[in-house]
Length: 109
Image 1: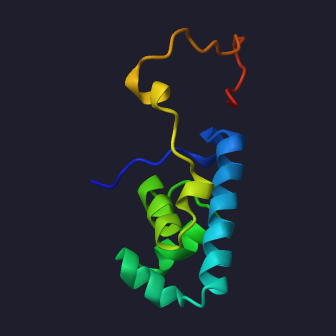
Image 2 (image 1 turned 180 degrees about the vertical axis):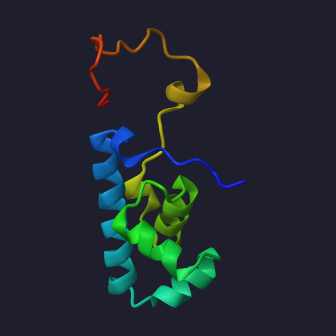
C-alpha cells in the first residue's frame, strides 16, 4: 500500500521554503565536495530519482533522507541544529498559542 503524501498546498509555506533551502544546500555541498550524484545515492542507498527530489526540496521526500544527506555532507548541525533539551523532555512550562482561525481560513503555520 503506497504511503499517503500531504498535498503540496497543505504544506506550510515556511516548511516548503526550508525544504527548498535544504535541497539547495545538499546539491551545492555535493558539488563543492566533488561527490557525484551516483556516489551519494550509493552511500544513502537511494535512487537517482530520490536524490533529484531531495535536491529540489520535494516535501514528499522523507525527512530522514534530507537529514541523512545533510549528515553525510557534514552540514547537519548547521542546517538542523539540535533542539534545546527542554523542547523534548517536557520540562518547559507553558503552551504554544496558535492563531485563531475563522471558518474557511487555510492554516499556514
